[in-house]
Length: 238
Ligand SMILES: [Fe+2]
View 1 (cartoon, rainbow, N blue to C red):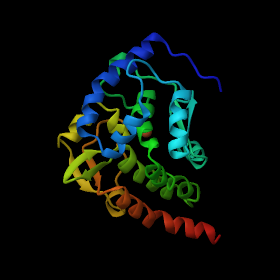
View 2 (view 1 turned 60 degrees about the horizontal axis):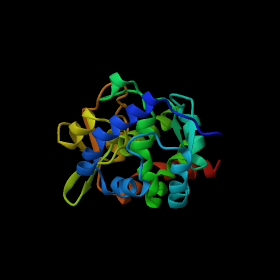
View 3 (view 1 turned 120 degrees about the horizontal axis):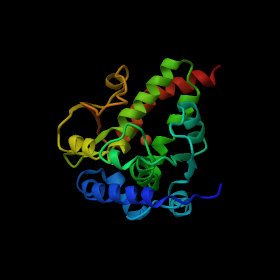
């Protein structure tokens, strides 16, 4: 697909969001995000081209970024792209009135929030666990649980690093006010575990009050395997 030209307004929104968020992430984001942020070198003043993104991301993690006109891709479609190691970024950009918070993921979220992580091969390996489990699920309940596990780790999780709590979730990275509330201790924090997360409904249209904290990428991987391995094994024996 040909890449697209964005409007001056869209680039201006990007630049303002970038300016607001860049110092916050330097202070509070996980090292897994920041190391990728440095290597990805997102432009501060305009939306990056697909070519700029993929020439850095694909050699680093094997993943490819794909643009979509869809504003909210369904989970089934999302995980089919995931299975091919393709990460969808939407062409939708929030309006100037929604700079501080938008309930709908936009391209600032998809690019600034997610893509630095895709410079990290080990992070990609953990993310690659989701699609096989999701696509082998036997019920809507299992699918919901897998979505919850993603939501409260990669999208809205926190992580412990050197005795400090750091921001890990991509939805927080692009989040403004919610990022600061998470980073500065104004949420209720729980340990991330299968037992704690399953059964907790995703918060979609308001800011979070409860967040989950992972110990490390290794711990996240081990925890996810507890739930995913049973699904994969069952599917293999059908
Ligand atoms: Fe996201």
